[in-house]
Image (tube, rainbow, N blue to C red; front, side):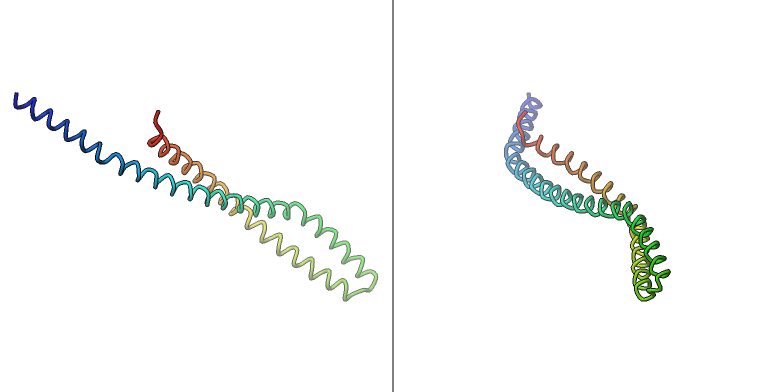
Length: 139
């Protein structure tokens, strides 16, 4: 008899605790959802920026070797025509182009890794956001 009474009181206290804590937990979950949504938005913007930068690097890596070949032939033509000042300027341009190609070749793997990491992190954030939304959305 006393055991049943204690059991009933215990369950009543647990129910009271759930009732009192439910609004606070819901509020915390809504705050978590807001934070996750903001971070998700920020990371998506970072990913879009990194993808644009990567596309630009890849485009330069594709286009610049052809531009360098044209510039080399232009330098040869200017040298044969005894236009040394113009040949020198073209050679400086070729040197700058080669340096840029070298920088792009080093940057490409780093940018690819950055895009992959951001994409992975965004998927994790999306799953966390989905779980938080499921906690506040009635089934």
